[in-house]
Image 1 (cartoon, rainbow, N blue to C red):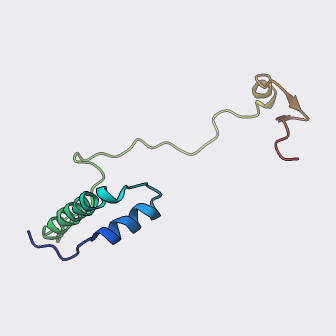
Image 2 (image 1 turned 45 degrees about the horizontal axis):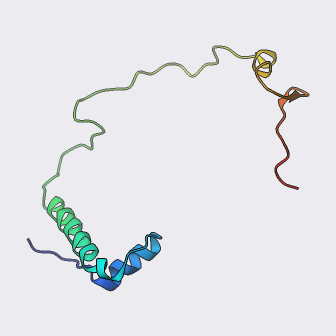
Image 3 (image 1 turned 120 degrees about the horizontal axis):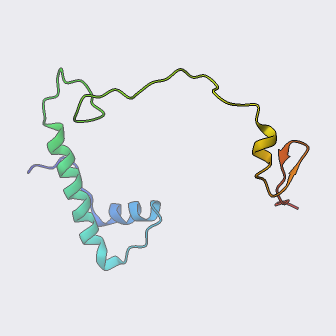
Length: 99
């Protein structure tokens, strides 16, 4: 398998630092190799001829059910606020967080 991009240990360490993942120095060669395997797989995917193939969201054709965007129930402020442990002036009351 021919690879066009290669990740060395320094790059693997930088990626780990950017991802805020602690990687011990002795694990860097294995991490770099894993990155290279992933990049190799991506290179394999780029060889597939996809001309004329429409993008898919599923392996089976389907369309999500649709409905009109209308309000079916509303104007229930009193019923909704009846569930609140503390409601004032038509709103949920919550403890103060910032002094």
